[in-house]
Image (cartoon, rainbow, N blue to C red; front, side, top):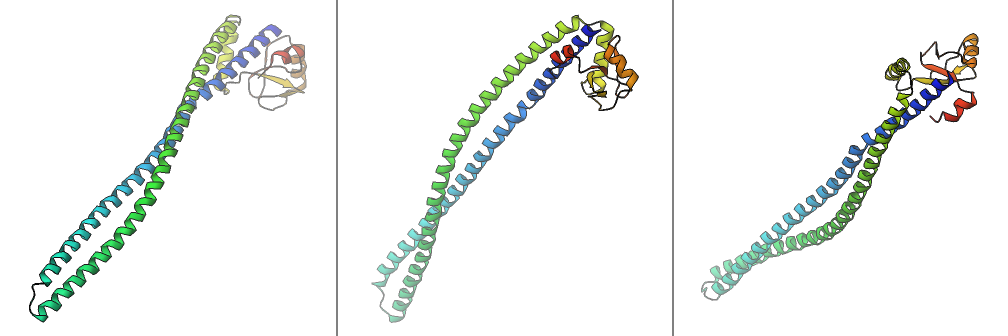
Amino acid sequence: MEEKILLLIELQDCDKKRKRVLRKKEEVPERIKLLDDRMKEIDDKLDKELRQLEEYRLERRRLEREIDDRENKIVKSNIKLGNIKSNKEYQAALKEISDLKAEKAVYEDKAIEVMEHIERLEEISRQSKAQETELCERCESLKIVILEEAKAMDEEIKRLEIERERICLSIDADLLKMYNFISQHRDGLSISPVIKGVCQACNMGIPPQKFNELIRGNELMSCPHCKRIIYWGENERFRAVDRG
């Protein structure tokens, strides 16, 4: 009976390892997605900054056209001023020139303000571009590491599957069927040690008489509470192989 228990312990240990590796493998797409999301986040930030920068540049060009237009009108008004004969027309022309200069000054002040925004955004976008480049390089390196880890996991899963097949070949078909059935209905835990009279899977006490029978180890036994296969966990031979 001990040999059967030892094989079941070995099989469960193998299944536990495989389950852990599979769980880690399932995390790979999410880990890749997090890196992609981070890269997209900084890329979107840079795009937004560049769009704002372009809007300010367009505004600057518009203001420059307005300034040039007022300057041309001032030049034409000054030329016209030299040909005016009446005082009334002369005063009107002077007012027109004064208004044009005032409008030009307003546009020039706005142009200066826009240029300050442009210089600030150019510096911010330069920093963001440098951050984007650095982050992308780092994320791509991390992706390579993650994919290499995933490849190693695939190899480990394959190795554990081969090991499982090897162990299963040594187990009686009916016992293996029982093990698999319990595993499916008990969260992958089919066999459990009993230590100091307590099943370590469900933490319920085993009746004294049943526990004494378990220590003798003459037959395969199940926990009366969780129905898992149980064995005496303080048996030195079982403890030596129970690595789960």
